[in-house]
Length: 228
Image (cartoon, rainbow, N blue to C red; front, top):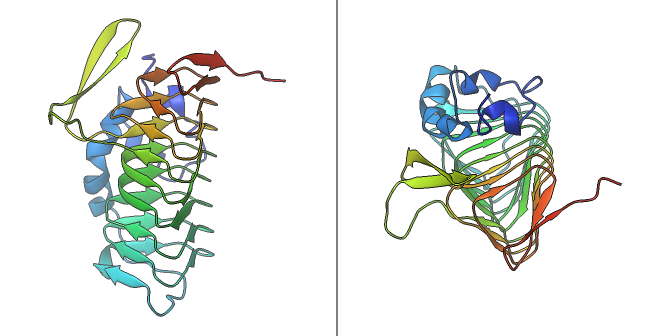
């Protein structure tokens, strides 16, 4: 199994849209599949009341599950799926090509596009999440930014044990494995991958591969997290 495989980062056994990862050798290969996957679904099923001042663009391409709360001031552009019992808070900007599982949070002044949120993924405050995947029970601290484009516009590469892997993606933000998290005002460089239970210190500018159970500090060093 590749160390970059989806199963290395996520438990997909309960995720309603796990089949989007079919035939993905590398976890980032899911990103260009999001639009086609959404278009192949029967969208347009909105099972909640829509408050005044919520803007839905391409409403026929938007599905929202039971129990989800949309606060006034939300902007959602289809195609997208937002699962059950989610929160989309005031000022959230959902730019399309978004798939959210259940019990997710897209918070105030948070912008998301071409992203996949597994169950209970939370980007609750002032975040930018583009071309990224947030695993189960992940949490982005306030002000987290997932940069998704290199300054030179070249495809994003990732490195592991000295081996360079070209993703072939011009836009690739970050992958947050299950139970990983970022501190407030942290930034991930394009192609950052956090393993299960990994984290980023507040105000750190993280890049590369952060192994399972490790934390990325402000000086770029890694520290293994205590499990006790």
